[in-house]
Figure (cartoon, rainbow, N blue to C red):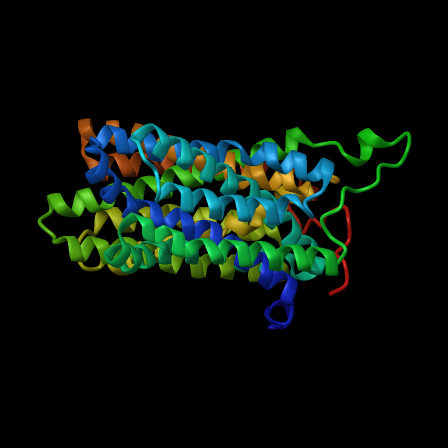
Length: 399
């Protein structure tokens, strides 16, 4: 596959992926760190929830803002600075002297994570050719998924020996990533603000909200469905009498095979077009959801993995589509997809949970299928010219 070969030989893209892996690895450390901090400060589940919300809010809601700032002022210094900031703040978390400081440090660390995501995505897209951009962004996205998945494993090993102060051992990784990202940006002459031609500022730097908003809506609806399945399936299988080992493997299968789906979606989008991949991934996800729900049991390891594969096929596709709908503001577009789109999808999970309290988990998850239908309708109504391979306004720099 020519696109994959190009990516393997693209050290700049690999560097931006390292940055993505690092910030999401830090995020994956938090679930393992929470019990230790709860024991130290005698935190309730509600307190831990507020700390988690503090980090999530800072890392997600802030992404469009940081994307806008990077588009306006450049990311040559902001991108490596955000990595270094995230590394240092995560180190500070482990030294927190009080509950309030713990929450504050989590918020500040979240800002570092939120700042890097749109900048890393925009620079990764600019470092590859248009014809392989969907594939590149799919692999870039999976680098973050891998970091988040490995975070708990790293945390269990480190915190088991060094307790919460062990998070300091992870700081050098962020600082090294920051240095490598800065070196790649300088080498490729990326990360500088684009020059605005006089008299055409609005044309060059306008955001096509009427096109971007529907794509963000598709991300929100898709995220709502899949996050609901991932969150509530363990509770469902616990009710059915299955052990934690079974539904732990089930969730791992959905997420892990979903990462493969992200890569497959990017490769297919470069070959077949974005609209086709986005439409058929959502269309096939609908029956996959109901097969997963109607046939509970050991087969769920296969049907759940299939659902994860199909739903996640469209992740990188929507990211590249959003980047192509703006001129000079790919960072801000990335922030809307990676930040606003996913976090608002997560907000829908409690709504599904409330329905599950009334009608049961399988029925509640089945009702979310309506959201996939709405997402399909939105895709059908997208204008043809924005649902194809949409190159960024600025051609990729030679590598």
